[in-house]
Length: 374
Image (cartoon, rainbow, N blue to C red):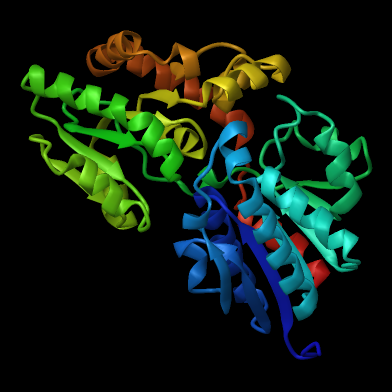
């Protein structure tokens, strides 16, 4: 039986970036609506706000088509369990964040089970890059979608899905690094999923070995998440360069201000590093078969949104089959030593960021819209 005094919200985020967005939206929402109960799927950031966390981020380890296929039965079971839980508890509002290949099947299942409540998706699937038919599919099951980039709305409004541009979470990043040869920290950001880390870590080890060989006096920073900290510390336990593996966000922010360059797993982290004015090299590695399949359908040449918007390589990328040891080391050396190229990278980035950032918090904009459903 529904509690008439409390509004119940189920929030589903299966990636760290989604967990971060979810926690900040909840904080903002609780300033205006104290009579809410939050349950859902999420990570460390949302856990303190959720009465019940059905699954945590550590359950979502797979990336790429082939990897997900091997975990398909697991994810189908999870979708069934979550959808039954939502129906049983009769939530007033469902919010799904990013992760379209998990969240869309979940919401489709809910609609088949006759869930009549309102459902919002935060972060649009990249229909402008590939699988454009997802825009129509999303319009069939969601009531509204919140987009991070201004050009995305038209793809969903074409199918009469209400679309609200809220802006990107990089809005929150205010403390910017000064590009300087005196900065002595090199950041390694290997990803927020175990699958990403396992695919990319050998390249971080190559960078470490290069620094050892050249007797560099740098400190390595590896920001990570609580469920991945043990794994990364195990991989770096024998390193002879001072290596800081930490989940402490305040410490991470302080160290970023002294960071010279970063090696970054493609995704939200690369845009966050860009906003911080840290020169970077983007890395990403999919299963070979997944890469072949995606290349048959993908419409774009780049992975980072800044490169995509400008249709040129502003931030250097090494993706999939192009990510080879000798090419990586050549690019890493350039990133480490070419101050002029790094300053140019940051200058070009800042020109693009001016066109995709709003002057208001994305969380305030989102909550203003969410309130009408409660």
